[in-house]
Image (cartoon, rainbow, N blue to C red; front, side):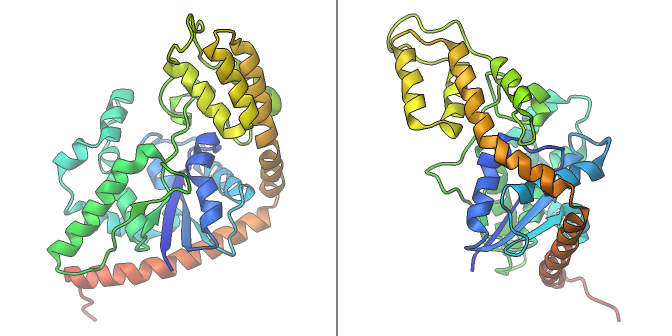
Length: 332
């Protein structure tokens, strides 16, 4: 059975980008493969080094994992910081990770532009920690979004480098996996880039957002002044609206607005109203589950403890092998 590993950073509420980029795949894969889904609280510190309430953020992500259909009986759900073996493997992989290759990482370049006053070592070695998350369970499949493809390539590099340096076949090559024809990148509401909390609260539609909040966010989404001639290419902002509609609306709705765009009669206000209602219809059942599960403290505690136990068993096996290969030996 193939091993699957993926995680989501614990920076609070999950959004549509998380759902379509990863969670949707998690639900499909958990009954077909041996799955490890973690809450990446270490990773969150690279951009939020002094979180206001890390405990709440972890609880919220766990709650929303379960609300979206992740089954703790079929898969392993755990908190990244509950697995010190990951931190040790991260350290060992860093010994064979080169500064130049880390500095060339596209996401690192983007982040140092976004947060020039917080260019920390964790930000630079983010791909190494991601590799440790994957390799600690010897994963072969990783459901990731388009923006994480380069990180996954680096995880393969680190796995192959370890195998080559120590003349072993310890780590398999992990590969991106998606049920669609290509990896999904969900656009934000600001007219460019991807949906994400780090780009601002108004850029994302969260799975826990109330109906009124969703309507307000969608109506404020960036568009343009409209097409002036038939066949005019869509601007990035308008294409983003159509992409979002493609995720939550039915085919006839999309065809209607696409036709009205092409004949220059489109009214973006009407399009946004329809998009908001379709998003509400999609999110409402998930939000109800979030509220129900979030109130069940005993359930959340049980899931966290059982997940930690299962993940620890897997991680211990890998780390013992790695330490032995490198040459660490017990003196007793």
